[in-house]
Amino acid sequence: MKIKGHYQFSKEYQTILDEAIEIDPTFDYAYWAKSIAYLKSGDFVTWKKLIDKAVEYNPKEHLGYRGWCRYQFFRDYKGAIKDIEKLDSLVDYDIGQSQNGTYHLNIAKGLCYKAIGEKKKAIEIIQKQIQLNEEEKFLGTYDYLHLGVLYFETEKFEKAIDLFQKQSKTNELAENQYYLSLAYRKLDKISQYEASLVKSKELYIQDKKMSDPYSNPMDKIYLENIENEIKQHTIMK
Image (cartoon, rainbow, N blue to C red; front, top):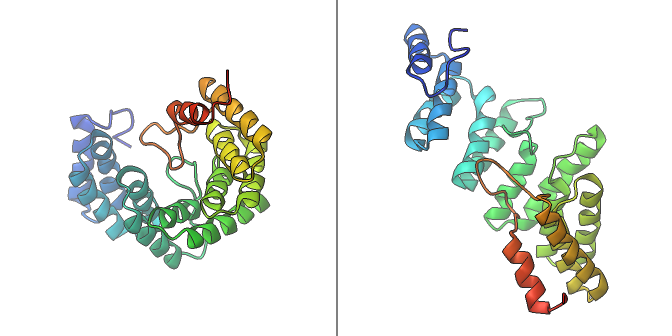
C-alpha cells in the first residue's frame, strides 16, 4: 500500500519494497515490483536477479510474466518456451495472456517455436489456441496474421490467404495486406496482388500497422518493404 503513488524509479518506491523484503525475504510480489523499473531502464542483469527470486517463491504467478519478457525484450525464445511450458505443467487452468494483453501465452509460445525454426509445431500450437480463442470470442490482435504468415512461409498459400482475409475482418493492418499481396503473387493472381499492395501502403500511411511501445513485433514490416516490392514489380505509375 505504501508504494502507491510513488514513481517506480524513485528511491521511495524501491526503499519501501526493500523494507518489505527485510520483513519477509520470500515475499514474491516485492521482488516482482522492484524488477519492473530495472527492466524499463535497461538494467536487465538486475531485473533477471529480481524476477528469478519472484519466480522461485511463486512460480505460478510469475513464470508467465518472465516467459513473456524473455520473448518480448530478449528474444530468448528457448527460455520463453521453457517458462510457458513449465507454467502450463503447474496449473490446471488457462495460463492466460501476455503482460501487454496482445497474445495468449500459447500464441507467444508458438511464435517462439517459429523463431527457432520449428514452424510445423508453431502452426499446431497457434492453430489450436486460435480455435479456443474463437470459442471464447476473445481473439488476439494479430492471431490470424501470424498464422497466415506461417502458412505463407510453408508454401500453403491458399490457407494463408484465408487467414489474412479473416484478419482483415477483425483488425486490418498494413502487414496483413502486404503478406496477402505476396500470397496472391505466388498464385499468379496479379490483379489481387497489386490491389493488396496498394492497400498495404495506404494503411501504413494511415498508421494502421503493428506496433508495440517496447519492441518490434514478429512479422512487422516497414514502408520501405512495401515500396521496394512496388518498385521491384513496377505496378504503380
